[in-house]
Amino acid sequence: MNYNDRFLRACRGEQVDRLPVWYMRQAGRTDPDYRKIKEKYSLLEICRQPELAAEVTMMPVNKLGVDAAILYSDIMNPVASIGIDFDIVAQVGPVIHNPIQSAADVERLKPVDPEGDLGHVLETIRILDAELKVPLITFAGAPFTIASYLIEGRPSKSYIRTKTMMYEMPEVWFALMDKLGDMVITYIRAQVKNGSKAFQLFDSWAGSLSPRDFKRFVLPTIERIYAELSDLDVPKIYFPGVSSGELLPCLHELQADVIGLDWRVSIQEGRRRLDGRFAVQGNLDPYLLTGPMDVIKREAAHIMDEGMQEPGYIFNLGHGLFPEASLDKLKQLTEFIHSYSSEALAKQ
Ligand code: CP3
Image 1 (cartoon, rainbow, N blue to C red):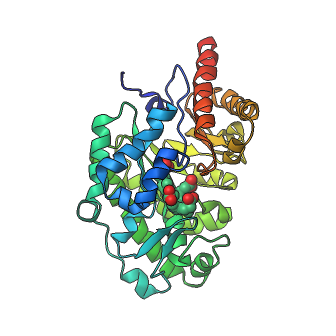
Image 2: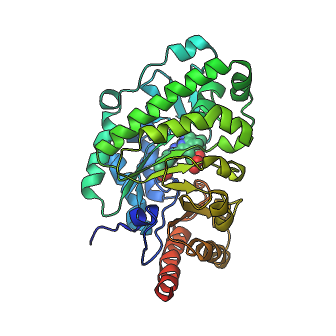
Image 3: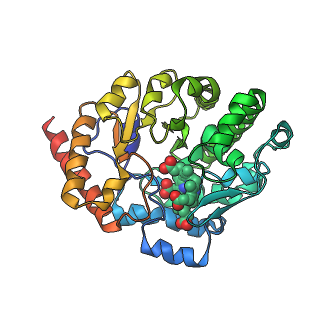
């Protein structure tokens, strides 16, 4: 099989003969074979075994026929290297044993050392680079989203401690943003050097901020990250997370290639708010995947019809997959994306 570069072409706004598709959180999750592996090992234990982590990364590529792989890892993976002690607890998510509360806590954070502390991740990337016939996407959590875990200590719905730090101790907040920005830059650079073909920053919870707060407290660091990584010759994706529609007009100056949209704005409206400056990726409501196949297809067709109005569109979900989604429906959906879009694009 030849190398399938449709995902990379779409990221660059080039023509494709059919739409590329991948799903956020496609690795692991819904697959019974993955669940068997999970009975023996935790997420972090899988990540520490490059052959196994590469196998889990490849499972959805082989089983679903998606056009890109995303590294099996977690946004929390690099924070151990900067001095944060955490576990990923089943059904909860990341739990931090030493949450950040003060200037001294931020001061203590070390620079990330990818080669020293995350050698297993880089080795997984090298294995995948040699084996995959589709592009490998690697990723990092964006500073706000990572900070929300580091400050709250666990997943939160209100982000009350995070916002309190922003408002009460802005100098501590900005010092933390600086350190997490440096972490992301160093880690992404190491990923690309070891063979990843695109990267995405997950800012899953940035939509909890007003556009004014986003611009003041978060965007400068995001803009710095993409500016400092602008020499990397791979597509750069920013996913501003759930409920991020109001943030889209703030992103015009970002030196990224692709913006991920959640399902609350249409593809057309998302492009309008982004002033047509980026390729876009998204945005099927992941909750829909528990519905009947004809409804899933109807909504996917509607999204594709808008997506295909311009080059530079990648089909995805508007947020990560839920464990409840069925592998069989995802496979049918992937086939449908490919057949529907190749017919439509042939007529264009
Ligand atoms: O996309 C992929 O398939 C690659 C792997 C990946 C994981 N997490 C593996 C994982 C990626 C890209 C992530 C990103 C991530 N991690 C985000 C951004 C997600 C998004 O869509 O916006 C967030 C917020 C996290 C933090 C995190 N990790 C949470 C909240 C949880 C637990 C709750 C949950 O949703 O399951 C995790 C654990 C985690 N990360 C799992 C996986 C496969 C579940 C571990 C398991 O199988 O038990």
